[in-house]
Image 1 (cartoon, rainbow, N blue to C red):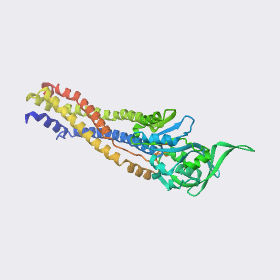
Image 2: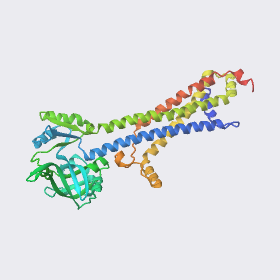
Image 3: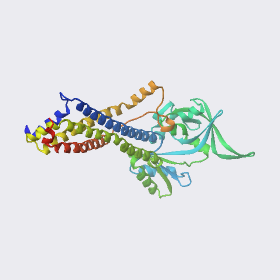
Image 4: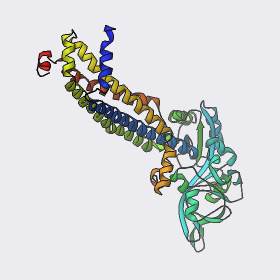
Length: 415
């Protein structure tokens, strides 16, 4: 029992005494401050993780893992290139496409968009856009039907719904006796998709590959191949292998390169937020210092009595270190639990606040999505808890050292 009396004394000093309960209230406030700091830090990091994860998922829903195009902007022998690509290890699908910037007109409404010609049956292998249709289906894009599928934001800007007509104006002109005239074709809207990414919902329209070839007069050529891979993060390496297997002379790109700025900015913001919000935990650690200093001041007569009974400076030091460690453990554990719980129910909490306040916190035109996803990574939780506990442990050293230096005669002189 004598070997562990420091634990007994350290835990007892955290409780209220018959003379002063104020010290215990301050200790409780220190625990609450540390809990809030840890919880806020976990929630913010979880939101950044969720935003990155959701952004990646939605980007890959409308874009391929990698693309292969010719140096002249078109791919002539795309069937042979597709056969070589499919023989490359890690390539799940290679889908041809035709893509060009065009204008869409309906009445007085005009909007620019990226028009992509696809083969609906093959497109399912390259992305999951078919699962994000709000109205109609991709299967309606049959050759010669002159149907078009619009993003929901683009359809809203044009005032178009399924069954209405829009005029597509190609950037290339056609020579006529009256001069060069832009090529135009009337399309019927047969579907509307919603990827959740405003960039694509506002700027992408889909037509059949053969209709796009006739409109843009590409003949049997396509813009390139869109590759679906078994491992998306291996896209830079695999698409380069495909280009080298074809003998070179191709432009290659992948989703990590096309959207590098998005993910780099998220990583930088996440690191900055960790450092900034860590200051809250630092403030809570300073509260622990103040709490232990008050406890040392309040318990000086008790410390003096312990010293006269044979307790050494190391025993007194250990007793007060234990107090700080217990405060740090309690605040860190409660903060981790609160942060994880809040992160897992954050979307419903945000929706409830939006309904109560009658406002929208996230504008999809600015943040690329309208909801607030959160994903808890245990590595972040462990990192936050570890740093918080270390700060608390360091914060206990000075008050504990001060308690160990208490002179019994000086402490008992006025008692």
